[in-house]
Length: 417
Image 1 (cartoon, rainbow, N blue to C red):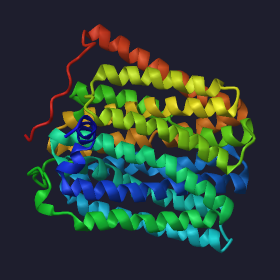
Image 2 (cartoon, rainbow, N blue to C red; image 1 turned 90 degrees about the vertical axis):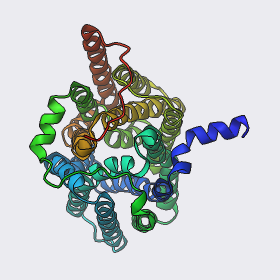
Image 3 (cartoon, rainbow, N blue to C red; image 1 turned 180 degrees about the horizontal axis):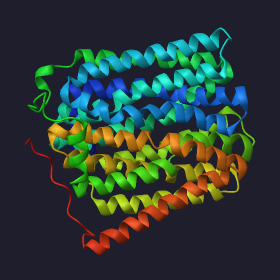
Image 4 (cartoon, rainbow, N blue to C red; image 1 turned 120 degrees about the vertical axis):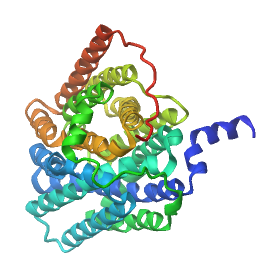
């Protein structure tokens, strides 16, 4: 095997190692591309109906609010039941919701309250889906390939940001908004097919008793484990105040740079380029630790402030690449640290709390970001989130230094209890 071949194998070794993960990986490429198509179309639909940044923030809040209420309970569900069957159910539900919105837009009867209602329902499905999905990676590939699998999944989630928004921009301009929702609904067939084709006997399932504790046990476990508690607190602050791009970027495109849907799509696509590069860099073997998490938070904040200050659209597009790179490095570092540290019988509940801080921060942060972008301007909406990330990252580094664990060793893979 030549040098290039070895590099490719090192980057994609989880895909070659696990047939089940391979099916999931390629199904995700199709499905998440469709999700990004709908993401752009939904934001543009709300702007077309209202022209309001606050309305955008409210849509995001409704989409993610159920995670705050149901997310932790969904982790108990993921720990006690077949994760593959849970994911089959959620993917079918996502498809039905997307096709419903397609029908409403195509019939020209869509109203803002309908978009809000579907966003809330989608949020409920997301609350159930996320902990099952996150903890399913360890079952597909085992702990030795987990970092690579999580990184490759992040590469899919963010790399499709390059293709999805471009498809959405073309569909909106050439066909109409309704086509975007149809594309997303059909795209779920790919991941549903992959889940159905998996071999159950090849999954790395932990022998977890069905009565092994509920939500309270999971919360107590996380609180009593500093290696889990500290990353979750840091991520909660940053995901709440610094990851509201779905609110700020449409306004940056339309108000600051006086663009159309294509401008918004371009901003997302260039962020996707950076995210893909960051995810592939992590997939090649970089291991997480608390110090890297804090440093990536500082870098995320700096990149956000720089992007907000860019005077022209070409400069802002270039800044999106850096923002995407450091953003995905932060996410993968936090995600993988939690999965490798958590005991297998607690992994679903730990990743449910991750989903609460990752998605549940949006109902709080999105309206704030929408308000600040509308009152102070889109640049400030982006910059304030960056300032918050930098502050949290620096405080985290200071706290680690006080404890004498700067340069802490990598977390050890979790072992079954």
